[in-house]
Amino acid sequence: MTSENSVGIVTPQRFRSEAPLTLKSGAVLPGFELVYETYGTLNAARSNAVLVCHALSGSHHVAGTYADNPNNLGWWDNLVGPGKPLDTQKFFVIGVNNLGGCYGSTGPLSTNPETGKRYGADFPLVTVEDWVAAQARLADALGIDTWAAVLGGSLGGMQALEWSLQFPDRIRHVVAIASAPKLSAQNIAFNEVARQAILSDPDFHGGHYAEHGVVPKRGLRLARMIGHITYLSDDQMDEKFGRRLRHDEHRFSYDVDFEVESYLRYQGDKFAGFFDANTYLATTKALDYFDPAFAYDGDLAGALARAKAEFFIASFSTDWRFSPARSREIVFALLKNRRRVAYAEIDCDAGHDSFLLDDAHYHAVLRAYLENIAV
Image 1 (tube, rainbow, N blue to C red):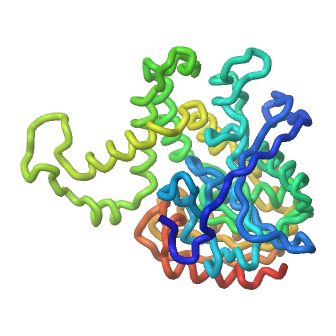
Image 2: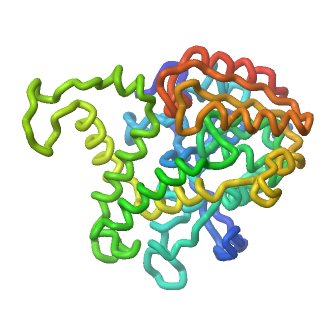
């Protein structure tokens, strides 16, 4: 069901690049496809285009719904649409499924032209830098020389940041929400535990599970359960579940006793039913590898010196996965370079998932910034 002021029925589109793409790892893709959606209208000057970058399990389906599946609402539909903070009456908004994704873009589920079989584990590891390079090819095809803004939350914010570094003359505004300049050791550790859950699943078969007609659902299920714990704040989990019992009594077994256990199992089962394990592995590695300051001996200000865009950085008070301190690192590095930057630290009890929610304060400050972007 569409929300109020929704963009309505949308249709995914497909872009094909025939030119080889050399990845950061040194591997070369002979060509690739990206699935994307657009909302709003590109103006005559082609100056109102905004790219929305998705997070770990997101997709190109940012807003609206599908004619054949009206319940499949875009993951940021509360934010994107006519009259919404990212107003499609002003902006031409594009959502792209990242290279290596499992929603139609070239990735592990695609056919390897060299073998005629699915790539599976043979699909090369891609990075945030590679995603941005592929997105630039799409922008070229659409005749978009410069983005009015590139916007994203979490891993999507990292992509927005990378756009300002890889193509500083092609982006006027960066909007990075609940993001970080690189992962902490704790975050890398969570990703590794999630990967090991998948890699140790007997149905993984070295990443070539499709050839065996199976899916490593147990590993994916556990990986998602781990992730959900980190996406929510302690206060929100206590408010939603507390120590409430599923059956009003202790069953003295390893089955579900507490409501929070039931929630995690449900989320894990749902995720394992549609997401690709190889994509999950590769995407968490892309998160781990992202570190613009690495080539500058850890100096983030040095890394951001080549950026020319204006920035809006936002964080959430209870987000312990990508804490406000990580966003402030970006802000301080930009200020050292005398870049124009606005920063909002929003009081919200929903943890890292706050960037997906319809929080009034969050949407108000984002709307205020986007309304001031000239097109």
